[in-house]
Length: 384
Ligand SMILES: Cc1ncc(COP(=O)(O)O)c(C=O)c1O
Image 1 (cartoon, rainbow, N blue to C red):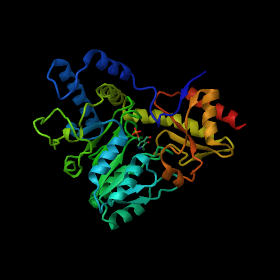
Image 2 (cartoon, protein in one colour):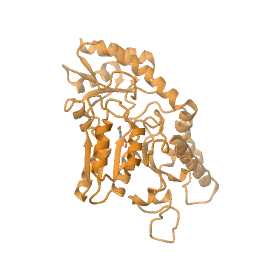
Image 3 (cartoon, rainbow, N blue to C red):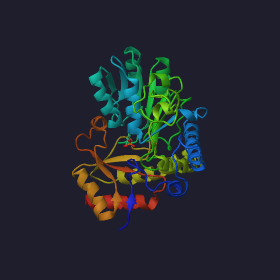
Image 4 (cartoon, rainbow, N blue to C red):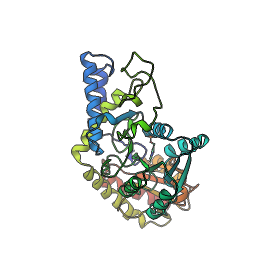
């Protein structure tokens, strides 16, 4: 059976060319830990990890501070580190109603420690009302704004630059969840006033699972406590966690094979160009939306155009069970999609798809027009 992968919002497939070889190269030819030994292969691994920090800081507009790139195993770990390390009793934060549980679950558990949050309701297209946002930000002594860059349910991109400007104006720390945006939208920490940019390596950054991290502005470092502490290979004569970057937040042996793979995917993205990747994904998204719009019995959720969006498209099969539709797409047509809540119940409530959920199609740079057309025909057959 044909195999069509439309679940790039969950994790990208295929990965960028060169990723598999880079992981294999580390495992088979390099070996060695970093920050520990001074033998040649350890230094070689260390150089690649440092180069990966440089690629990340360059990609996200904080190029002078590669040491402020922290590696974690995914963005969930990054967000937990930031949320639990930054917020203290009495602090209040603002989120949108489109957040993923990687933000909402740690925030809800921080309620037990006296942290409160205000949730700004987005409209039926997942768009933030910036006037409402400013009103809440200006009136509530807000410590931080934690927001997704793009919805993982309907693809809507947030007005990141405007949010950053307002965070500066009202002296709130701006934490961006760039899970669905990194590698497909240009994100610039300086230009957009982002204080902490959290990323995951295995989605639109086209790298391996088990890679992620965050980039933290140097003025903010002292405000965010470390979460995981232990051996860093540095200051080993003391039992106290180092306070300098990136060792403050990087204890224990990291996913070096994964970072080798991420190094290759970042180079691929930078060579290809983020704008070119986004443009290609929008061509596929536009083709899909245009064809699907004409089919009776289904409803595209959120925006129906390609302005200000990513390639995540959610569909509600109105008279059917969306879970069964997703299963049928796989079983009978070999098309991988994801149904349900997408770990974002509040987004579904905003978009009026709670608790039914949707079938989410998320296209990637390597998908083709032929695959889109094949999926449209499959949808027509299923609906018949
Ligand atoms: C917006 C958003 N934030 C956070 C996450 C969590 O990503 P990860 O599983 O890589 O930690 C996801 C994954 O679906 C997401 O879409």
